[in-house]
Image (cartoon, rainbow, N blue to C red; front, side, top):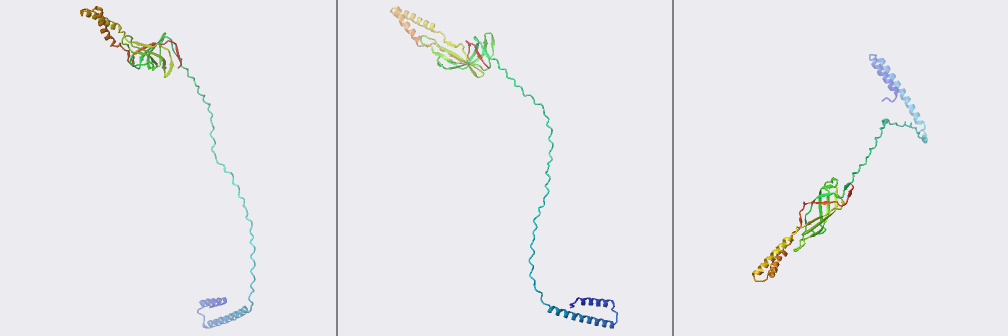
Length: 282
């Protein structure tokens, strides 16, 4: 509506004047309107002149755009970082070491070796046989074991560790004969066992012999001969012939019967004697 700023100013003044003096008379109002019209006319003329000048003025020559100024890159500034101070870790102070006097090394007392066991010559061993023996079933070389129940040295008692025993073998086993010869059984010991260790030893042996029954056998034969002699005379023969017949009859009975055998039960007592001194290191 209003193309000039002055128009706006004037209109504002008029409006202000209207607002202030609404009660002014008509003449002043007409004069004011006339004045406004004049001013508008001037403004119109002024705008026309300005438009003509603008139309006649040559168009501005477009100037080439200036090349962009080179971007000057500043070298990156290396900001020296302050070297951090070394971090010192607080360490607890070591506790003072109290040196104690070294304890003396334990003194090893060498065990005093036990005195050797001396079995003097002439020492007697009271034994108990651990296995049975028989002239009928035992054979030469069979093992024999006898436990030592008591040992007696010539100068007093000899103490042996418990469980000591003798080891030996059967030397001869002979059965009883039919006419002559008694049953016999011989045993020899050559080892003593003390605390599980075997040691050689020399002792007397054991000899068993059956009872002698030949005297009784001879009496039986003699009785048979006498009865035969009597029988010969009764039958009308000679006494000599009857003795031969009676003796033969009696002798047949003796030849058919064997003598006694040797039988030794396990647990039977026995006794031997040491023939040579023996020193046993414990």
